[in-house]
Image: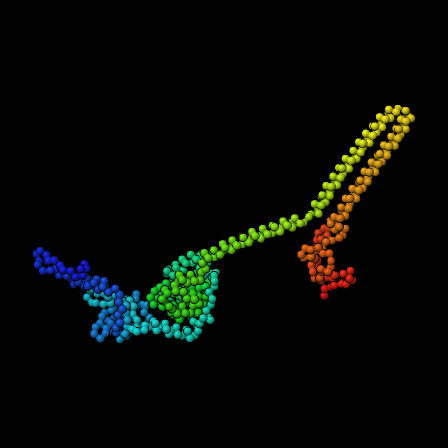
Length: 466
């Protein structure tokens, strides 16, 4: 048997009668038994004997055709009731069954009271819903799009409630880079309605947020009622910032849900709906980086190949001049070597003639021979000078010829090289039209010009742009 329930008391050795309970003990055990047996009940009946003492508590009885029960509703609970009940009202109450030990009265401690049948709050809800719907405040056409992604999120809720914690937790996980501004407000009680309206107005005046979450965590119908008030509904409807209603849980529906641009079942779901998933962004960025890097490598490889082909086809005029200069140096060395070889041959011949002259020995022949030798030496020197001069002239002529055929020499004489916009050398005016742009290379520098007139010397015709 439950230890707190009625108990049989053993008699003392000196008194054969059972020990009697005191009135306080009996009432205490009865109260404990009632409270443990009835957790919370809903009771419907007619309100009778209603009183409101200066303490602010309510005392009344509920009765039906046969019985009645006493009820007490303390100030902390009855402050939430918007319509004060009156004698004879048929009401429904929610509360806990207990016993008032001082008088032994069986009673109910009431936590909530509403009219029987359709509650007053529900009636007010349906009336306001019909009114605002008739005004077009619920129309889809007037709802503003939610930015995707938002640049700045505003939150109208309690700074100490679970809603702001849930919203910040979701945003920190999904996209912590988005700034969040809290516009604190009461979300429950008599002052909540005006507080919420002022918070929405502050968010608009602040001008930072481009989306606004308005809501709170779960609670009873009375707790959430400020979001069913007409002032809050019109503040949301007139808000220039796209709004998301996030009130209570999935099953909770408020007027704010119909007026807002988007409804979320919970504050966490609101943050989930309007925030981008940064992990998805990061994956996309990494994929784009990889694709860009691969494309850049392919492009660079292709350009390197093209550059190599063009480099192989292009021959620098300076290289040709260097080769010609090297060839001239080789010819000069060969010429000097040839001259020395011929001079050496002549010396050998002179030596041979000297020997023959010495063998013949006549003085006259010697004089004649010496004279002939002098002539021969002079002739040889003249021949050598003539040959050297001829070779030098030939060498100069060759160098001059190379210089004449050099593109740089041609440019230096006043000629120029013109190319079209594709870099092709222009040799014929038939490929040109008035308005074309050509680039001209001079001996020093280049310039671009626009064709205004074309003279065809071969046909004697002239084309000119209007």
